Amino acid sequence: MSAVHTLFEERVREGPDRTALVAGSVRLTYRELDARANGFARSLLRRGVRPETPVPLRLDRSADLLVALLGVCKAGGAAVLLDPGWPEDRVSAVLDGCPLVVDGPPDAGPVAEGPGVPVHEDQLAYAVHTSGSTGRPKLVGVTHRAIAHRVATHAAAYRITPRDRSSWLAPVASSVSVVELWPYLCSGASVHVADAATAGSPPELRDWMVASGITRAYVNMPLAELLYGLPWPPETALRLMTVGSDAVRVWPSPELPFEVAVEYGSAEANGVTSCLVPLEDRCTSVTADETARSSRPPIGRPWPGVGVPVLTGDLRPVAEGGIGELFVSGPELARGYLGEPARTAERFLPDPAGGGGRVYRTGDLVRARPDGRLEHHGRVDHQVKIRGHRVEPAEVEAVLLAHPAVRECVVAGVPGPGGDLRLCAYVVAPDGVPAGTLRAFAAARLPEPMVPTGWTPLERLPLNSAGKVDRRALPAPSWGPAPDGDGPAGEAADPVAAGVLELWEQELGVRGAPGDHFIRSGGDSLSATRLVDRIRSRYGVRIRLREFLKEPTPETLIRGVRAEGGTR
Image (cartoon, rainbow, N blue to C red; front, side, top):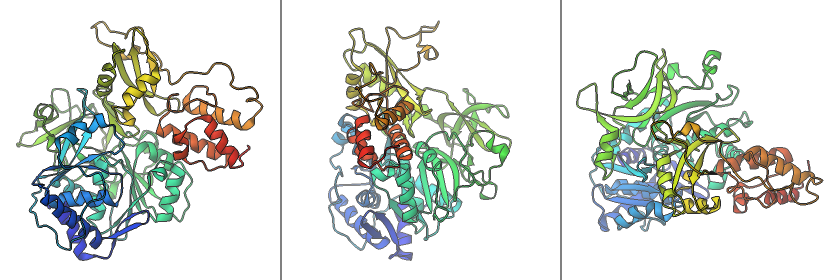
């Protein structure tokens, strides 16, 4: 296997004038992208980057981020992916420990020739943070070998050609964002970037995909369910949408003009399984029969070269048809948690089957069907997925317990009013503390998906007979305070205000008043997307999600409906 930038350079030689990236008004050919990355790589070398030197990249999805990512690979360094929206507390340790941080356009001109730094396939290519059960995030180090294997398997299963156009939608600090790019850029295809506002609005994202001629797209599950529930024009160029990051709950309609397939992986194990494997017996929205549709979509079979033993707690194979923990072996395993050998040893174990290899303990429970496909059956621990982001409740609890007013707390994933999983914090604070204060405290220290949207005060936490917190005895969460009374006088007689507040209550599960704050009432970015779409469907008006989130109140929506002439 080759280092990922070497695979890319082969495509540069084959088709230097093919389009590599389109991001708004920016369009780069393979030659231009390569030259900009070469210049940046040489700049990094002059600034002391050596094999596996960590180089934090704090950039949005853009041409600059792709140039920086490719340049770090060419220089032999290891890109550390950071989200520009993360609070300083989340990334301070990384930033303090690295003298070189890229948070703006790469500062070098294009150079035709690469630096020629030899990079071994077992060198680190990048590192990403994942939520940690000990109360602090882990940094997962991924090698060039892992990316090269993904390129080979995905290019074959997706049948990628230079004519393909792929979307780049994943969060920049996730492993998906990296592996979403390389199968296409190492196949001569082009990658297209949707801006944040478009990527957050399903109707606008659909329209962008159609207008951009996107042929292949990876979409996180919560957004995917909203996307494939929309009407699509039959002339769309999209042929395949792959869905992952969380358990897929419903089958897409076979009437969609494109195929939808589930895949499964993680930062530690990269690509693990897919419903496209093997192609001649794939299980997708197009091929699934009524029997398959009677249960939730499976997560598929393993990619070629990947092992997926299903084991008991003592590392023995489960009985046929039984549920056990999924372990993973193969070339896509990460090196481990950087700088944390003890945590690495807990999750990356010697292969119980022998042979000297390793397996990664995923914590996911699965059952193997008679046809070899795997079904997902939850977790062995309390880890949850919130809008496709992995969250260890213990990390959130550790942050909340640092607040001087909080004596005890438990954080759990609980279905919200719309059925999607949300974080709820159950807090014991004898002297009392407003939920808004706690939310602000958490938001200053945690990424947005890890900030609870439900805040339930308790006098004490429920305990079981062993003296441990009994999560099953936790009460139904409080998603937001119900206002007193029925709102301002005349509201009931105003059909627009009444209709907006009705949709607000349907989404959040609590009554609202015109001045209520959506996030403090239990909402999040995904439920805000759904609410704006509800408004758009009922009133036939176009309200931008980005504008609503600047001032997320019913009054903002009411004004927007009126300004657009919506009266139904």
